Image (cartoon, rainbow, N blue to C red):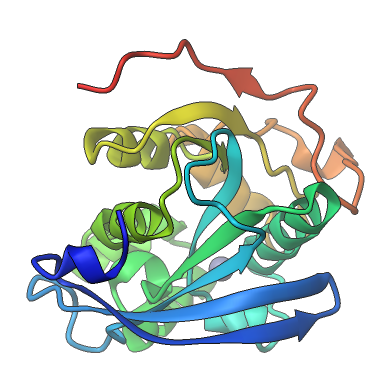
Amino acid sequence: MSENAMTSSPLEALATATLPTRFGNFELRVYRWEDPSAHPALSREHCALVMGDLAGRSDVPVRVHSECLTSEVFGSLKCDCREQLERAQAEIARRGFGAVLYLRQEGRGIGLANKVRAYALQANGADTVQANEQLHLPVDARTYDVAAAMLGALGVASVELMTNNPAKVEGLRNLGVRIARRIPVLVPATPFSASYLETKRRVLQHEIPSAPMNHRPKVVGLSVVDSERYEQKPSS
Ligand SMILES: [Zn+2]
């Protein structure tokens, strides 16, 4: 389906340009997506960072990544977002094709100020889930409609999803995205991120080792050795 054919979609293609990065040359596509249910602090402009022609292609390595200003810009050690993003870009560059869908869902969809409020509560002993609950905010307010729409606009037939989050696999699948495989993105914990990663494993059921500090995956690219190949189901 061409982007022009998607006139009834709320996804609007705004701009495209080549973006040289330290991982290789990508094409940066910017889209607008109006979601009235999204937190008002969140940007409506989302990005697809694309390498190669993905139209009609199967088993495309894809990272659906939610914005994390604190780690990606400031190098925060409280989470593994930046490293997951960089590993995904490196893996796409290694294969020569793929996409990062960068969604502006800061703080798992609660916005930057609320995320920092949650950090302040975490400094007093709350974990990442308890902090959101104390703020009367959802633990995870993210949605993946825009990611599914971007994959449709790019014409991707099926994806190999780079994630540890089973809820993301399920969420995308429920939106009609064909996921051929899940590729784990395992980042060693730091002393600052260990309890956060443990909460993601224990409470949010992310598929990460219980002692990720001992795990040392290759920094360049991702191993598909540990990946889960899903049974191909006919699209309904
Ligand atoms: Zn983060």
